[in-house]
Amino acid sequence: MNHIHYVGSDAAHDSNFVFDIPQGHQCWLLVITKTPAQFWVNGELQKYPSQSAVLYRAHQKIYYKACADKYVNDWIRFESDEPYVSNLPSGIPFSLDDPDYCHKLIELLVIEHHFNRDYKKSSIDCLLRTLFNKLLESYCHDGFTTQYYDLLRLRAAIQNSPGDHWTVPKMAEYVRISPGYLQTIYKKTFGISCMEDVINCRIRLAKEYLFQGSRTIHEVADRCGYQNVEHFCRQFKQVTGFSPRNFRLQASHSEQVREHPVI
Image (cartoon, helix red, strand yellow):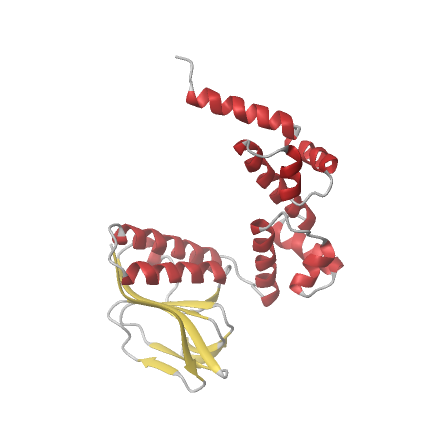
């Protein structure tokens, strides 16, 4: 069971902001910072970087304050008896793996909480479960840096627009590092080179276009970022084992079988 008392995003305060509740709330409080902040942890005030999350259990001392020109955070005050909530440590901030993803979930929770829709309760339950899954992933994976977040944004941009003219220098400029260093840390971070990632995203998009069957091979190649259709066909076969034409035939046959099964 989950019940949200209040959820908010991008709450901004000035440099003298202090949140001090010695006896804590009557329920859970989740705070996700957008700026650096100081938290009372293990009997002392400690500074934590932006993109940190902290979960407070009911009646736990809450104290945090701004330590820059401004303080910005997302937060949820809620009740829950779900075990996935208590899997996280309480009162100890930790860095987020994908802060943009978590922020989008908070924004969706704000919408669901403030509008009475038919499936409000189940939507909130699903969003909270997903949010806490991401928080637990982050807690179990430490060592995040600003550079890591830049790489995440680059990878999201590649996956969202694989048809763009991606080159190693362009990707390096995106994250403001040298091309050689980008290739090293990208492979170390994601287990795949940046250009291999681009190719895989392009082929994945091409397979979807071919499955739909409404575009020519040349149009598919162009939409997926290939200026040369022969190069596209060669790379597609290297990755999938099929030529684009044969892949389309196979996809069409599979679709017909699903629509008209042999009885």
